[in-house]
Image (cartoon, rainbow, N blue to C red; front, side, top):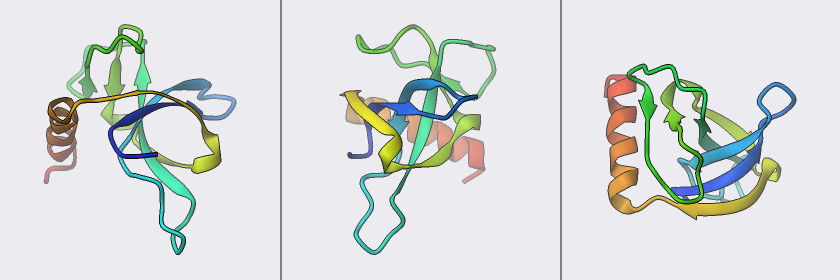
Length: 101
């Protein structure tokens, strides 16, 4: 589990199972067993916090910056693929804008 990978993640009853971008890598032994993720959605609203990145393993949609969350590593089901360094840089830039950093 590495930052930049996209995994199928069980987000619970309300959140369903959906592709999510890992923003953090697998935690060290002295850390909580959590990773921070950015869910992908196909229910687009056309707002400024949607980051569309086309990948063959994703349906048409976007990563939604307002849905950032941390989940236990046991909820990660399987790896779907990964973003390129350039694509991940786009997400990081948009996250900085979202958080005013």
